[in-house]
Amino acid sequence: QDSSRTKLGAAQEEWLFAALGSSRARWNLLAQGTVMAHIDEDPGPGHTYWTDGWNGYPAARDRLVNFLAESRVRNPVVLSGDIHAFIVSGLRRQATNPDSPVVAPELVTTSITSDALPQERLDEWSAINPNLQFASSEHRGYLRLDVTPTQLRADLIAMESVKTAQSAARAVRSFVIEDGRPLPVPA
Image (cartoon, rainbow, N blue to C red; front, side, top):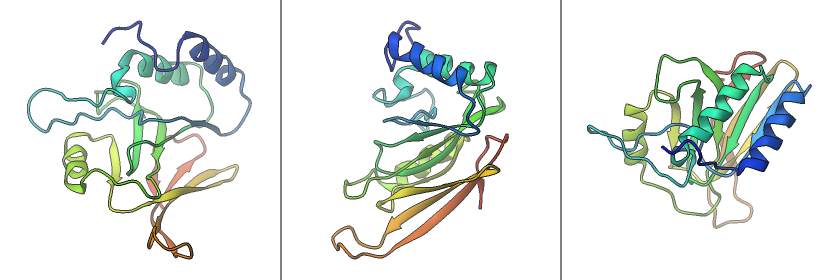
């Protein structure tokens, strides 16, 4: 909870804010390594957080999300990984307040070959974290993005087999983010 903790370091955080603040792009994709969404992992009273991701740096996440909201960065989309699961969420201005407005969507890709958390755990997380729109560890795969001036479409692509080089792939879910509307909606 220390407000001086940074996920990026002070110099990189300053660089990111300057780059985003001066961006004239219609879509601002922030590719980074760990889950940014607020995820309470404890279905009972109290809170449990995986502190290797942005949950371990709540003040840094708040600074970034508040910057995105206040500077009106156009269509920020956070692209994440590291959890070996597909997750689609809305990053809220106040991470723990489900009534707070969504500032940016987050699309988390699964891994191609690494094992994942049990689906039952993700189902528990989804039940107590209303910002999670979709969470699945049942598939190995990747994200495919189709970006146009009016929308960003994210297809969550699952491999039939990660043991066969010629394996088929299919979209298990698809979401659309409309220009100016940060909440992902099922396609």
